[in-house]
Image (tube, rainbow, N blue to C red):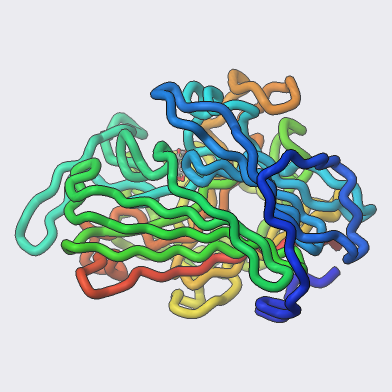
Length: 393
Ligand code: BGC
């Protein structure tokens, strides 16, 4: 199966797609024969602790990939893809209940906003006015605002509706973040659509409009482990990043504002490297991150859909390409994950039990005049696209 398919098949063919509100008999052995009928099935997924009803959407793509998604944070709870023998395995971290996200880790598989990654000191100045954000994170003892603050977009129940177009199926999430939400200016109307295509592409379309100038940096925080959820670390996965530079950070994981060429460093993934091979190298950046937790500046520089990353796991043959219109990607290898977190199948997770490939603008851009702007102004539309293209080798 090739994954280098560009947009072929997108919006093709007009066969009927089942969109219903009944239960599904989803097994772990969906056939990859091409005969899978694409569907979207909706059912309840419990309630948040403040009593809001959460819905679970099961998207079955015509290519066989199956994804369970909830409208609480747009979180992907389960993601089944085939290995090279066709065996389907859940390759993402998540929880069986809403309480798992509320208790253990709200970012698993989640949409992230209003600002993905960190803003230094929880503060930025825009058009002469200084805004203060909650400081909900302090790596290296330095406070910052992470992933939108105390209640980021990950913690909202979004309005949701099923999508179908030809043999593509999906779910559309919408959210209105009020003026002043977590300290950010402007009412922001956000729409995020997840699509599963017949060629096993998970396509994410992000859109937002605002009524006041505000920083916006939306991303998705899914963790991958191609051997399966709670099946050990991701250190043996082979990663390629189409990027010649990172934005190096200080001990608070805030970019210094410089660009660091990756050539000759453990950050050079321009050719495939096993993640664990150089992770313990004597390198200040690796010490700050506790491993890889950095922003790579893509050679494509954003603006058009282009390759950002590729990931491969030898024993299962699972292979992924990440394409994006964004200029950067955060590769985070789960350095803060621990074995205190229960998995979905009764096994606990572990340190580096998953890795995230978050397409984005650079962290702390609102305070970094040298970085591409993340400011959205009234009258403009924020639009980005990221595709996770699944395959095997
Ligand atoms: C960041 C990490 C952070 C993690 C939280 C990632 O996007 O890069 O530094 O700890 O999110 O889940």
